[in-house]
Length: 434
Image (cartoon, rainbow, N blue to C red; front, side):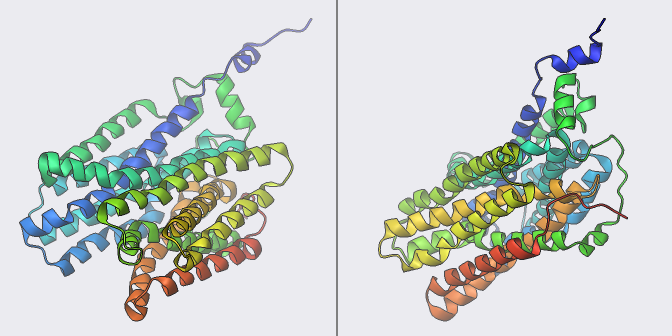
């Protein structure tokens, strides 16, 4: 006589789908992340006037975030891998939220500079932690979907942050705006620590069916231990790590144009008024948000269909995305403003299509318990593209008097990114330590 065990009954029950609630919290963390880092840009004119801060010092204050953010990527990823993403992401959001609120108490250059550095230190843990959560809480066939989903929040945050913050400053002043926005992250951190568990097996609301679905769908099983098979710098021995870092550098170089120089380009070279510019500048970000979610979902569908291997699928979407991003070089050559904006929207959508795969790759290739570390290493290198890109663009514009050469150079880097993913990136599979 055949008997049905309790375990079989449990796994046959409908899945609890707790992982998608966690995906929603991951999305919110990145949205809050981008809103918080944007507050200073909107408040800068008020800060400069009230605190008598010269333009040169304001530039140093704004750049302080990017340096600390980039340099802390690897330590933040290692910390989340070693001690768990519950502490890693929760502490990260709490840290940067307190730094944001405290900025409302700033009295001058030194306090603003220090708080901006603190913001970068806190925000460094967001993406590496999310990459680690995606590798533990989702089957391989959903990895690109959740990666595209949480990264899409950066475009949402960037699109809504400016009008939201300007409205809040007009309503309550810049000091209370910093305090209020920081408190949102504090509330998020409390909810996160109450709800999240580092592994599905220990979550009070994840049933056996969901745990089995997650674990059965992972090539590399994740346990409850935190042992790492190698030190972070040993990752540099592997060709795929270099390909991931260099490729993401080219993507970020192009992407940062849209949140640094795009408003100036639209006003000075396309002759837009400030109100029109504010609306148009949001269009590429919105296009990118939609494209990234769709790309993550579709790439997972392709992997599940078995039509192409994981390696081929990742490369198809990476190369397609970067090919679309080359439109940034065509935008200044267009004969109409409408066509220029359309090309910029295609370019930004291309960078996010590639990004949906970029944030899935750490979970695909990282050694056991090192997804956050790999993601941090990749993001550190990529953010130097964000640091260097605006500077190079500024020098080229100053030398030529136009954005055309700067945008063509961005497209050239996009070509290098395509070649990198085609030829340097090898088979996408977990790194096996000796």
